[in-house]
Length: 274
Image (cartoon, rainbow, N blue to C red; front, top):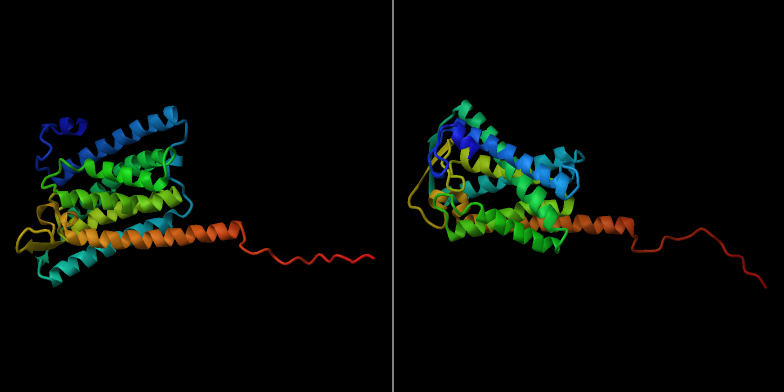
């Protein structure tokens, strides 16, 4: 609301079309408000450090690269599949470096705000009072509910964003690190909108590749974007399965390292006595 007022916009008109700079200003205010609010709760209610929500430096580079790669792979595969099945048409390219840079800034701010709130704070605290898988589901439903006022929101969009919450939260419940969820969230939005030309959760953005749709339907997601498509449900389910397998195997290896499954041979010799 403060961002809207600074820009001279009506805070009650959520669907007002805004230019990239206005979007960034509002995202900055959102991030600032999130940091202050979550920081106060973390320090005075939870009595824990801000860093403990998931800003550990150990492994941040590897996790960030993995998150960027997963988001880019899903979007590139989805775009290619929809073009192949003629659900969308790639109509050309529109190179504008300033808009690409503005898109990077905007979606970094969005990813930081939402991951700090939803995974770093909400999911983190829910795991202390319930099974981590139940906490993951609850936080993912809450994540989806935050998008219900977006333009062209639908039941399939609701389901897709729940799955997105699970996809983003699954690495967190195993690692307690926010780097992969932040990078994946950024990559998902950036490649969806700025690169491949889908609407991002109902928001229209500049895009490097321009596309058109024969008709808005359940396969291409229509005006809500790729997150409104059935194909997104399939691809996210596959990604969730592979991430779950990866982290489950990794956890099993850690347990076996700490508690060996076999008793190591001993070199101690016991002399027999008469």
